[in-house]
Amino acid sequence: MLEYQAKKDLLSNKIILVTGAGDGIGRVAALTFAAHGATVILLGKTVKKLEKVYDEIVAQGSPNPAIVPLDLSGATEQHYLDMADTIAEQFGQLDGLLHNASHLGALGPFEHIDLTSLEKIMKVNVTAAAIMTKALLPVMRKAKNASIIFTSSGVGRKGRAYWGPYAFSKFATEGMMQVLADECENTSVRVNSINPGATRTEMRAKAYPAENPQALKTPEDIMPTYVFLMGDDSLNTNGEALNAQ
Image (cartoon, rainbow, N blue to C red; front, side, top):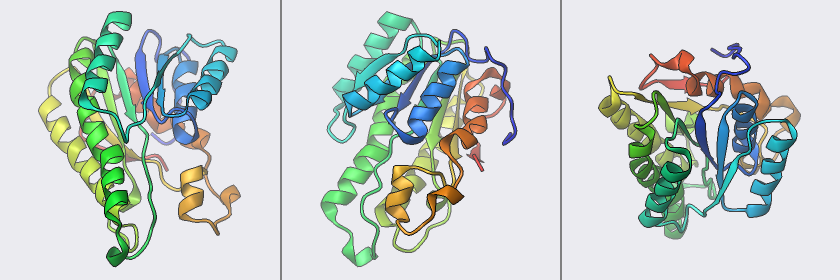
């Protein structure tokens, strides 16, 4: 799977929503899905970043994307319900959902956990993903085959000192994936998670400021697993916790 090579038109006629699409892994995933024929819905909190990705997608000759500016830390359930209605009206279905957006927060000892930071991390990484998925499931069931990808982490599979709330949130993400995958067994919706691994992103640089970024894989390097899960070659893959490296 790490060496998976997708057909150029693997995602043709698919509608895929990517959260955190303005930069990092989300940006590259959006560009990659679009390059394989998908119409991508770019969701993020910074409009300028989304507009730049929009222009990049158009420039590479892919289907025109859509932009949804939304700050997950402040979004309500009604925001997601309205978004689901809009997607249903404009596209008729949703074939893919990549939960990529995450908030890292400050790393440090357990005794130093800040309540405000804890609540924001859980809101962005867990609550937003859950309520968004709940709202979008009816639209995804309209697709012949639909794929939901949750973004996990190594610290969401084995706890590590000083990673606190971020690690808690990723353990919750894995649990959410497993619950939903079990519910979706033998349906047209499949649900999996990806641990991107050490990747050259701004979030990684914040967590490891002394690390040499040139020694890390780029977001482009880890895309095979993402494309595999979004395409129909993964129809029999459900409830799996995968690694992109």
